[in-house]
Image (cartoon, rainbow, N blue to C red):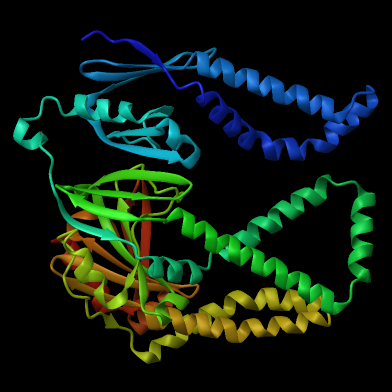
Length: 472
């Protein structure tokens, strides 16, 4: 069958332009003082210069659209792109592992989606992306990919197991999220960037206005900012995992979720390297857990460098039994881990307290008298150390290594099949030799990279037994 060149949907220009604005926004913000000075020197308006730059950016994206074509042949997909340097990506259908679809809500009436096509290569992202095409294109590519498969394999396969998040569970998941912390970090970063580019007179006026506010007003402002951040975190999780559905179809897991942006992805079960059960301290109190997977895949569920979430929230005591029909090498029952003896807890507490001593010293020296409040970090660090020690656990069961760790009041239990362990390291300092303790580090594949799972201060004989089991 001859190939015929096709173009993206014309609305792809808008999508490309919005992406370009996002990519260049921070740089434009940082160059604001330079552009303002340039405009003053040549009697131009800064608004005029920015308008010209935006129009040039739009023109560039129009050319990108014009030079982007794709061809669906009998046995391969070809994508042609590039303005000055032309790029031709040729993908045989038999090498396609999965096709991920993303659809913003405003594209639903037009039945338009973004396609990310993944093969078995070792690149860090999807080998091919069609920014905006009809959803029927995904169906056509899938049909071409499977056209040589026998009919009995091509027939519709019923779901072997299904999971759908309940509204109550989703609300609990959103309310117990600690996502407000990165939001405050991001706001702090944006604030610092904005302050750098604002005129000094504006900064002086803002500082004087803050000084005039009473302590009560400052507390109100802080509370309002906190509530807004909490609401933003809550709503973001609600829209991200809205109508989350998971199904096992044959040897694949099919998942779909999202309110404003619907994301549909397919995960071959044989590419799952490990399964993790994660809880922050709030979800532990409510006996809720989140199940994620390490996969040899470029799909990342929109969480950069994170594992793919396959069950956002489920009751702790039902997690293993509920997951088993989806990933049958996971045990039906929760493992009974071996734990550290309480006399080893002080090692974690010591290390945790040591990490806050320097910040406390600097606060006491430079921020008097408010620096004395930094002493509150000591009981916090002691609690964190105790929590890490209490969470540490290990077990070898059903030819799987099960490790549990605790960091920053987040607990993670990881189940790793023997065959999926990339490497295993045994570390022991001079002082640990005397006390017969050792650190264990296990490396497991995550995407095209690696994730380390480290369990600290295990008995030396335990680490040697695990190492011996790994060498078998």
